[in-house]
Length: 327
Image 1 (spheres, helix red, strand yellow):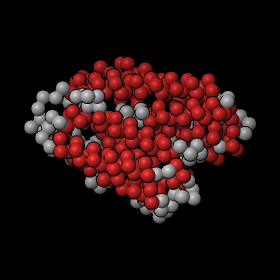
Image 2 (cartoon, one colour):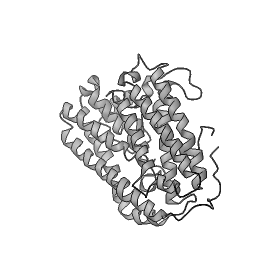
Image 3 (spheres, one colour):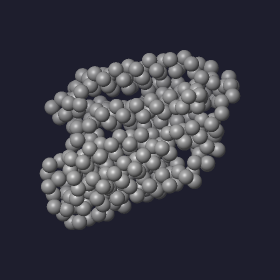
């Protein structure tokens, strides 16, 4: 059941949410999409050289992780098209299907099989030796990359017109920009905790053991690097620009300063847990009951309360997506 916030705080001092939203649009969202688009173009130029393509793919994925919390507005689900993150970063990929499509010269990327396209399909094609040697691999990789670039460019282009609407829709009710930004921030945090750490570890409801195929970026070995980047992206959103971000917003309400202190103490605990991890922790031989990753998951779970229920209550912003955390 979704968390229910208190009514809009009566003790809130003046806080300009228009400036708040403009700062996120100008300082975070637009630059992140533009950077991702530029990195994708660089990858397109390097796709034939394996070493160069691998290095550039890593830069692309780092750039992608800086846009993944902004899965609203132009990037949100629209009828048959899923959100941008789902369309270009579904994992695990279906290796058998990818190989079949390559053999048949099937470059259909508008279907529901998102596990045969996107950034993690490119990872498989670039980092797996068997995939690299497949006849037709390069053409499939190029077509896959073109599809990703087209989708990202479309979202980036639509943000040019959506930006003013985003800034002016400065309420806190469901459907407002403040609500969309906050909900996707929390949803992205829970995606990191539940699906990038918890699911491969076998900690989700109904699981009995670790599943290495559920590890993000398992072919490249960058799983830990990317999980760290995902978290640091969320921390940057939490911080925002000076006097204009979520922390400044919280400082405008009673209890906000105490929440900031508690949350930042736990953020440091999560960062410490990340530092204690090693990239080999995500390997098949080390994943099951891995103590470092279990501690990391526990520290992330402790942070959920501050980012989710407490922050929602203090700011008077409802959690509008379906949540299975039970808090």
